[in-house]
Length: 295
Image (cartoon, rainbow, N blue to C red; front, side, top):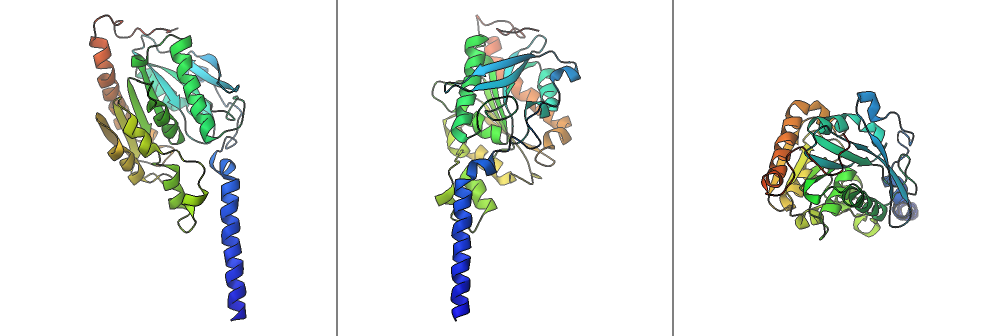
């Protein structure tokens, strides 16, 4: 009996200790700017694309680094929020895809990622998203109705937050391979822990999409081994109309490329829909002309 009591006490101590560790070290465990590293491995120039370095100041004094990649005869601009780990130089294939779809691309590293200053955190990513949006609208003069917000994985949560703000009205929103909330992910990874009590990083994507009025495309792979397919479905089901769901095939990091023969046409169709109203409206610039183009 005494041995059993000792075992129970030790097990309880380990349980509480591990839970406290997850609570205290949550930012370090969730945000992975050093995997594989903060150094930029390449620039869009290696693919033959022109680009400009974009240095963006946030409201709390951080300086973000990104690239503005112009498309010839662009019909719109994509604000690209990338996933966890790595930096903007690890998203070259996606930049190429969107460029070929006739979109300027602004892709930015969150604070603490790549060449951006600061330390990553949930509230910080929100400030970074706002700063990137303001850069496009205020500094480059690109109207909101010509901007599509795109977020992959962690970036989907950041993009959903941005698009859900009352003063935001992007042409469209794409949420790809994203979780339904930080709490939901915690429950999947640590089913026996008191996740609701120890979760500090929320990212309630399911709540954010209920406040998005722009056309929405949700993209997910049934083969995603990191973020379950049903979370993508949950995000879609919670969202307002107009909305579309596209199912990819392949793992979390490569699904868009593995499924590119279907993925690219799906993106093209979505872009046609979101820009159609703007292009048909009297007084708008003709298709392919966007304020701030430097192509």
